[in-house]
Image (cartoon, rainbow, N blue to C red; front, side, top):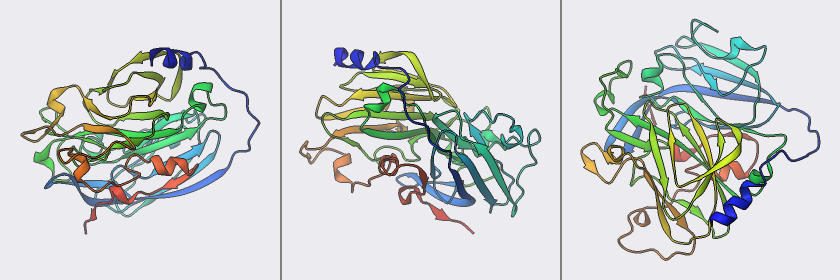
Length: 340
């Protein structure tokens, strides 16, 4: 495995490609009071984009002209910051209230216009009271900008997954407009808004070259460990690393993104989890939180396999949406209950 990964690492570099014309893409996001379930009976009042946490996937080409109309249907003010976009000569679209724009008031709308650059794994989130709206109210979603000139390494990828990591303090679950204090102690930890065992496995075939796009959305640092495989830490904050790092664990801090690439060459069921053990709980219960399973197709189920007892929901990591190419993807897997 190490020799194969090392060989892949040597292929990093810009590949030549033809010139493509930029497209204009028009999207719409509604910010809505929404109740989601993290795990078991633990619900949370969120200000969700299109009634889901994470929000819809925006998948565009590098250089596209993007227009996103945001409708604020909640009782509090919001903005959207497009985390990772450079916004060259376009600073008023950066989404910071009181600095680049007036916050979007309840009942109002605002349209963001921007050029999709640079390429890579990005994300979007509210920038009003980020300590609450981002850390506790689920106001975040993935933004992928497809490069004009992909590296030779990423051209080998056959399967992609998006993992957005977050944490929650249950004492604020039903108190929108409050929380996100320095004294908070998160007691629930999620991948794409769900805690183990209500996550989905990441299903792969032997021989797949897998890309995991990790996004740190909360206020905690996480130590993500993959069993049974080494991976290349190939991209940092959307940018390819000149010398990818071979590892089996990666630290990801708030706001960071890492793209991990590895060869699926060891069939079985393998844990992916936060190695900060206090992040693998659901409240006071152990064996929960920020954990999931890399699951190879063709491995027989076992009666004691916990995730094997649940109905599989595809596209939990936007893996099916990414296959469809550029576009705007709502995801019923993440839909919550809209609140009046």
